[in-house]
Image (cartoon, rainbow, N blue to C red; front, top):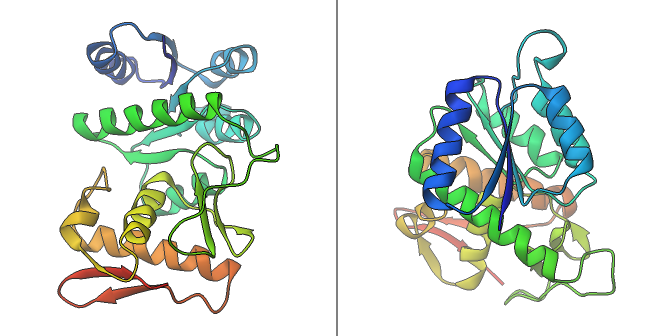
Length: 237
């Protein structure tokens, strides 16, 4: 039975998330929290397969309570899905990606996007709980590119030439799709399937740009991802 925590100060939104979860996973156990203090106490004492949290949890010290939750979960095993209506979503995505958040959805949330992200996060959480962690001797699975390793059971997740690359789960799915078709052009439409929110060329361009930037921070000579005009993108090995 899955155990999920919802941290959202708006009761209507919190109840909506609860109803969606119960509709798709009737047997899951869901704990609802409406402020940082109660959520943090429970997260300290319990393990959750997924934590769903807003950023803004109310006035005063709860204004950025979601950020404090992300920092707290950074050293634990529960994936964190941020759902927020704050402006500048790209800025916040980068912030929470640095804290190993699972991913980020912008309000108002599409029901299908929400369920897809929750399902992927639960699968990840269950797989990681059953497999070796990155702290052991387990070696991340190789890919068609000998310089790249991807292991969703590990907190490290993506390694390029021995160095960690910090990507969101949406970006990892895009990366996997490109690498699975190494040296072949992957269409925009195929890549859109890996994006939960904003399936369009502009949003895809932003994600690909972030992937390139993160790889370049680990390797200044990185040049494996290229645009194929009028068609899509390619990963060159």
